[in-house]
Amino acid sequence: MLGKQSNHVHLAQCVTVEALVPPKHVLRRLHAALDLSFVREKVAALYSRFGRPSVDPELVVRLWILQHFYGFSERQVCDELTMHAGFRWFCGLSFADPVPDQSTLVKLRQEKWAESGVWEAVLAETVRLCEAAGIARPGATQRLGIDGTQITADAAIVSLEALPPELTVVEGTGGGSPPLEAAPPALELRLEVGGRPQGTHRSGDPEWHGERFSNATHRSTTDPEARLYRKSDGQEAKLRYLGHYLADVRAGVIYGALATQATGMAEREAALTLLDELDQLPGELAADLGYRDGEFLAAVLERGVQPLVPLQDEPLEVEPTWQRATRNPQWQEQRAAQLAAAQARNATRLAARGRRGAVAQRQRTRLEHLYAEAKEHHGLGRAQGRGLTRVDQQVKLTASVQNLKRWVRARPWRRAAGARAARLEDPPSSPVTHDRPGAAPRSHSARKPGRRRRRTPGRPCLGQGLAGLWIKRQSP
Image (cartoon, rainbow, N blue to C red; front, top):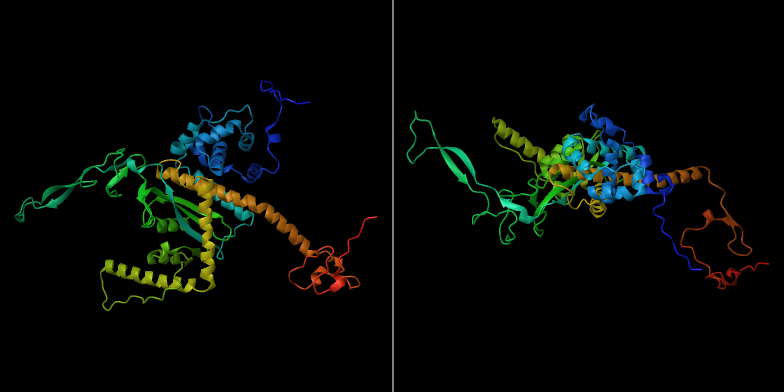
């Protein structure tokens, strides 16, 4: 009999949210790992003791984690929470509980929680989880890596507009004759025109091809904090930000994340900032050739960290010397900086030679994998909002969910590794086999190493003749 399903959507059904989540779902492992009780203490001072109760702060953070874990926008995660039973269970909501509006998340992020430090606290909590699980071990033997990536701003080139002219007041003579000794210097008004010499480009003008834009003469009306940036000569310049990761190159755990404006000095400045935020400095810092600046290397060495930059093929440079001494404090400071930079580059060249530098550079590619994962699966390739603060929040939350993925993936493996270690402590007796009829029994561990030949039914093994004939036993 051909069956037909009848829709009973109007009937009330008794079902629990707990029963709808599969036992081995990733949300169950995340729920067991996360302890977000610190969020309420972090934002308690921002709320009044009177008035209407607010949305639970822990619920808001769980929504942001779901948003960046699955690459949603804030509107999408609220829509998914409405109909997704697993998301409701992860957030502690039943089918009867209302879902927070998307505008609530936006206002908390932009206004009330903007300077609360919640995003830094969530990232630190994920690092603590990974360290407690044994995935990463901080200390003098730890090797961290630093690198930056481009994040396309939520603004188009056509939104660029020429900066208005600025009036600069400078001292002048007021004329062609030299000024009198008793007369005060006259003031001149100089008009510094912003934008291109042919005219001023207006925002939204589609005719912009052939014009020359620069960060000194133009700003985006959509996102004024975004900057034109390109990493190489063959790449087109776009409105971008830079995201920076400080990660353990062996385990892939991200210890620090930061977003900055796209400038030439941003990567080195962000590296020093992230190092200063660590509770315990690592022993080594792996980086690419973009961090070969002598002043940066000297600053890293002053912090007790050995930089590993691929400079091992370069010869040692001669440290600068001066024939004449100087008493000028500014010149003395410049000479000391030049000498320290040369010494730091030489120390980096010596440290990067041999297997140590090669292994560090091979492990440093783990950062490229982290950036590829963040852009492919978590939406870090393009900014989800406008402004440096919003992009910085996005980078930190993306790094947090990547650390949670490291924890989730490593826990079953480490349980299996512990079980294997327990079996190795008390190994079972080796199984006894007969290689051929009439041969003395021997264990698998006593066999010679090498590739094991596969015996084919009915065919003798090579080098054994008829003695190696495999005979299949017939069942009675």
